[in-house]
Length: 330
Ligand SMILES: Cc1cc2nc3c(=O)[nH]c(=O)nc-3n(C[C@H](O)[C@H](O)[C@H](O)COP(=O)(O)O)c2cc1C
Image (cartoon, rainbow, N blue to C red; front, side):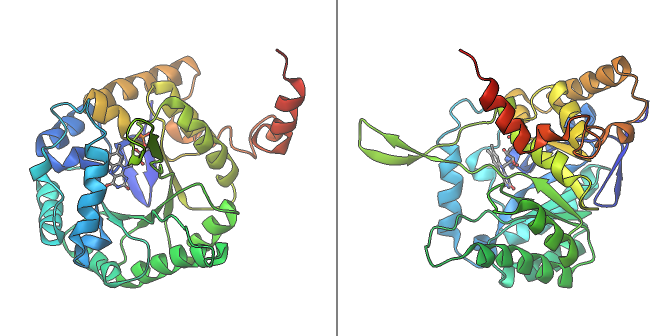
């Protein structure tokens, strides 16, 4: 059985890797992930605010999820271990390259072109195999148009593309008016792949203290459904590599992501809560599924149920909505 896949031009032994998180700030976790069969390492993000010197904004971000991770266990790094500053981040890339034979994907997180995009060149020099750009941005101003927001993302890709010849993946949120159009623009701008999707952490209202509080909800397999739709819709419209990020908890989730059109599946919540070795279970379950369904290779699976290949394309589109609403019975 051939589990190999290609992602951002990298030949990977299988389609499973950890998603960006502090999990891999710790080398013990990296070794355990490698032992469990991970095909690549995606690093925790370095934030534009860190590179440009606004550490307060970064600390606010870190505390936000740290406070909400009461169940965090020992493989979660201690707060003193992160965030890595820009120099430490470059050192970490070099150390990871020594510690593991796996491809290392560095992650840069920013919302606008700035001096941080030049930092991509240093990431390349430090030996990373690819860069993931997280463009997490929440447009809250009524003066900002949809086109303005898309142009920001495209400009970031153009800027980083001008600095490096490393493969670039763009991690996006699903909240764009025309996601497929944006994906096409990013491809033209020089991106090599898209990571679908970022999860926005929604605020919560604390009724006892009458406060709005940040809250990090970990994902469930339900989060996968939005990814499946967009993987299926995009697969045949772009040549970009597609990574599924969000809602991968069981081997069946991995299989679904591949069938819809993902080249790889990134796993975060499941590894943070159950430990790096969980990746081996996902891999084993995937091979069992492939054997049962007589798939000989992962490449045969990728996109086998994309919009073009799906026996009922309406399932991805408006027809699905109509049918479900019309057929609803108590
Ligand atoms: C504690 C925590 C830290 C994260 N840190 C990052 C990060 O530094 N950069 C990033 O792009 N995504 C980050 N993410 C988002 C994950 O990479 C992933 O996209 C998201 O959690 C959805 O995947 P999941 O359902 O497998 O958790 C983080 C998620 C969690 C839970």
